[in-house]
Amino acid sequence: MATSPVVPERKKRGALFWILIGVGSLFLLAVVAIGGISYVAYRTMANAGVTTDLLKSNPKFAAHKMLVMVNQDLEVVSENPATDEIIVRSKSKGTTLLHRMASDGKSAIMEPVPAPAAEETPEKAKAK
Image (cartoon, rainbow, N blue to C red; front, side, top):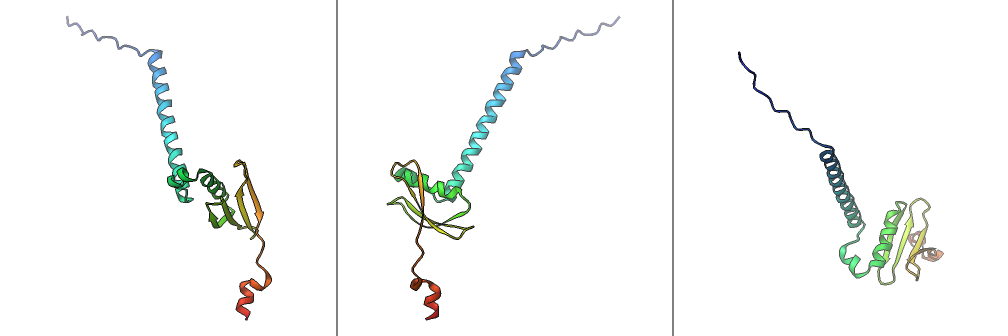
């Protein structure tokens, strides 16, 4: 009579194993997500002209510039880092605004820039 070999019973993996696998997977997913968000934020700031040098030398102006760049309706006409002022033009309304930080550094102020005098407009200069 031939006896069949005894197959050892496989060890079952306990609940602790599966809990550790789940926690490890969540940790890995969080690391990948944070890395992706950091990369997108870095590229967005670089495209807006905010460099690490600007962040180190004038963080208030860098934050101000990022604030303006977030609004898709605004385009930068000129900027002055010394006075923390940015002149922007609204694409939808066509108005020009002076965007500056308040003295407390926590809020932004937008003021309309006065239009040039009638004799200074380019149309009048071409007509002459």
